[in-house]
Structure formats: structure tokens, C-alpha cells
Amino acid sequence: MARKFLTIRPLAYGLDMSQASLNTNMMSFRFPSMNVRVSSNRIERRWDSTLFRTFDDTEVIQDIPIYRVNTGTNYVMALTETDIARIMGGTGETYQYHTDTYTTGTIASISTVNVTGTSTAWSTSGLAAGDKFIVDSDHSSAAEPDTNWATIQSITDDTHLVLSASYTGAGTSGTYKARKVYSTPSGERWCYANVAGYFCFGNGNTRMQYLNGVSGYATDLNATYTNQTRYCVPFADRLVIADVYDQDTSARNPWLMRWSKNGDPTDWTDTSAGWNEFMDSEEPIMGLGVYGDNLVVFRKTFFHLGSRSG
Image (cartoon, rainbow, N blue to C red):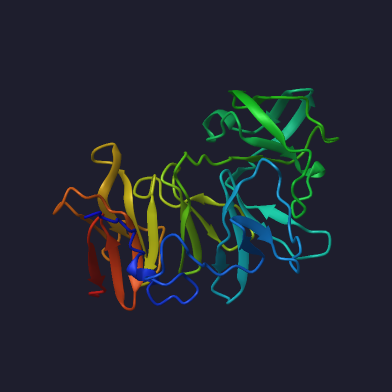
């Protein structure tokens, strides 16, 4: 007798009517879509849809989450393979990068590909080859992609960097931005969560990042406890993460789950924070979800239900 293997959708989405039904045939999913349809085994744009925003052709959008701040305002974000951006709606606006950005010091001079800084600390800033550079006087922050963004080829020292091509902007001095682009490995995707007004996101490779409002740039969520996070979910006023770097073994631990301080996803040492290592089975953690008042920890062939205890 032939055996059939079907992927069971996470229980967290069991009551979400915007998703496909649990008993839908896996070969004929009918996920709702507003601007495309399937016709003759092809994906076609609906005749009444319109193009809203165009991103730089180097950006591959992986997800479009909503960032809800404590004031009740919602912002539409875009997570690409290399950046996080906010979709803008003003006249002449497109989108604005909120990727981790270094702005310390000023530019003293630019000569073709050579950039000299004043009071900068580029060699210890975390900047690396492939990151982006622009002088503020050449930058239209809410109308990306700005053609004056230049790619950094190398960091010579604290006050000298080299671009991969001659800088195209008119500015040669003053304030600047150095955007630290992210790296998303093949097969990895962003996870993200809104917790206590913070927008937290990671992709299993970089240090987990967060935004606290949209007036600045993303930065490391925690330098010790949230690196290389593959899964995250908001639960019980905390950020819960799993399959994360373990400083005790100096490697990512697929059985490790951590939760942050109540109401503060940047604090992982408070008495209300904690961790658990699921060593009852060799099966790694495969995802996190929330079902009613329960936290769901998915394994390969089974799952755990957790509840808030205090």
C-alpha cells in the first residue's frame, strides 16, 4: 500500500481564516491573494491591480510585516535579503531604509574611490565590504533607491575607506551614512515579532535586530543572547526565541528556547526572563506559535504547549 506524506500546518494558524484550510489538498492550495491569480498553471496579475512601489533591483523582498507602535500607529515594513525598509506614502516618497546604519563623525574629503573621515571609527564600527555609503547632502532618505549609494570595498583604518567605484554624488564633506547590509543565507528567512512597541527581527544568521519607533535605525537586540535566532514569537508580553546561538557551546543550538524580560525584549537577564533546552528528543525545534493562551513549540513530529505561569 502506497504511503502519502503531507506537511501539517502549524496549529498556530488553525483558526486563521486568511490561511488555507488544514484539510486542503496539498496540491491545490487556495491561499487568498489580492493582486494575482493562478490561471493555466501560471501566476497572473489581476486586471484591476496597480503597481504601488518598486524597490531597487538588487533587493529581494522576503516579507512585508506590520510594525505596530505603542501609540497605535501601524507602519508597513519590508524585509529584503539585505535590508529593512519602511513603505512611505507621501507625495514623491517611495520607501526609507531603517537598516543598522553608522553615522559617527563626518567626512573630510572624497577623491574618486577614497573616503577620508574625521572622528570616525570605521575599523571597529562593524562596517564591512559590501556595506553602503552616502553623503547626507546627496541623500533623499524617503525616496529610495537613491542612485548615489556607493558600495564599500574595504575599510583601511578608522578614518579611511575605499569604495568599489568612484562616488557619484556631489558631496565631498559633511555628515554621512554607512548602511550595514544584512546577510540572509540560502534557505533562511526572516522571523519577526512586535513586543511592547519594539519590532524585533532576525534570520538565523545575523545578530537579531530591533526598532523602537521609526525615527532611527535598527540596532542589535542583545549582543549575547539573541544571535542567529531562527524562530521568534511574541507571547505573555515577552519575546520568545528558539534555535539560537548558545554562548556556552559557541554554536547555534536547535534545542534551545529563550524568553525575554516581561515587557522588554532587550533584557535577557532579568528574573522574569529565562530559557529551556528541549533535550527530551533529538528532534530540533521547528517553529514557534501561539494558540489561544498557549505557546506552541513545534518539533518534527510533535509539539509542546506552554502557558504563562507568572
